[in-house]
Amino acid sequence: MFGGGDLMNKPVAGQLEIEKPMVIELAVAAMEELIRMAQLGEPLWIPGGVDSQTEMLCEDEYLRAFPRGIGPRPLGLKSEASRETAVVIMNPTNLVEILMDV
Image 1 (cartoon, rainbow, N blue to C red):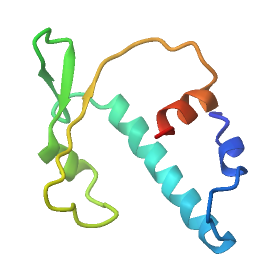
Image 2 (cartoon, helix red, strand yellow; image 1 turned 135 degrees about the vertical axis):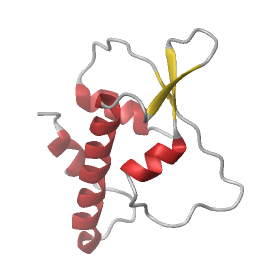
Image 3 (cartoon, rainbow, N blue to C red; image 1 turned 180 degrees about the vertical axis):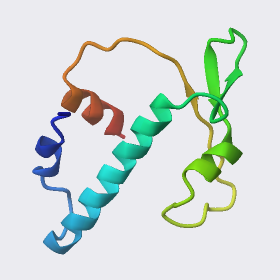
């Protein structure tokens, strides 16, 4: 549906074949989490910002809704998230590649 097969067939620098199933599992779990986060409203997302059209992530509710993580948060790491809605006319695979480009 999202063309994710194309992304999984590209080689990852330094990736061993043995790690590939774990990488795919992590990517699928992240995609499912992203979809759930996009669909959920309050209490996960609370009104915020000056214009009140922007919603801010409630970190406590996020940790309750998505308890598993990939390890402890490093000291000093600050995370924040907000969301807005917009229409993007683009191939889903290209959109994911743009968002993943460091």
